[in-house]
Image (cartoon, rainbow, N blue to C red; front, side, top):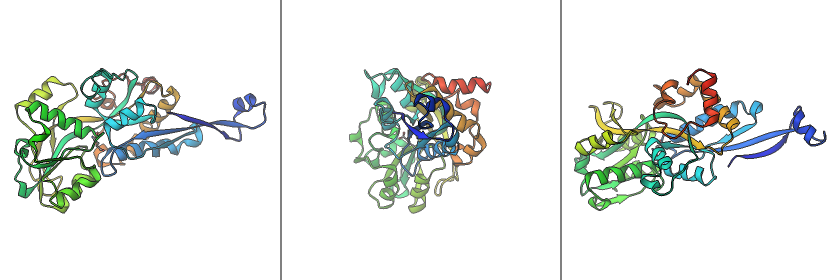
Length: 323
Ligand code: GLU
């Protein structure tokens, strides 16, 4: 929930009048952005947005923080319950929450609003070389870290398993370690493979492939083709060969987009300022993580948002002729 308190200011005439001229004051607004694990990209999305917002705090009075969280589902639920104002969420999670489908069956979040889409997130599987896993189907009977509770990685894994007619029981172990723990688990031979729906390159996969001989795994086949054909938020994705040690060839998979979302209850002025902070400083934003390098503003407001665009963001996009 947006928290506002009065702060003393040298000017601030309207507030001063309200207070009978006693104390010049203006509103200071505190906002929180839900992110993901610290070795992922969501954490950097939130930190980057806050950095740009906080640079202008003396003008608009908005102070932003972006703590680490469990990921997409945790963020959408925190926005829904009013604990957080904004958050990063996979496009499939956004779609399901707004439409009341999948994890949100019978629990539609009508007030969910999109601000913009960010980077693509391929569904990424990394296996120890000694586990001999080339395609997702080779994971049957293996020890797999399927994603932590609250993460989009876990929900997308559940979708993949359902499409294949598998259950978690088809794995010898289905652990739910957090992103920050999974690279070590792979290196220590506690699991054969890890799953992470995440932008590239990122610290977690870098760490995993640097500490143990490991390869990225293709996630392809008729069930994946059908998932992509049937759902607007899925697309085929390629992780370029050579991006991580141990995988020279391109890896074929499918994926979603990271999206930046909020609630219709978040005030228009706040979302307007947050949107402005990102797009007025877009070159600076793009440099804050290599996964942002190819972002294009026009695409960020056209692809990945299925919930309505928040009115405060729309005001900014219209002013700039972006929509
Ligand atoms: N896509 C992941 C999730 O929804 C998070 C990825 C990241 O933190 O960059 O949980």
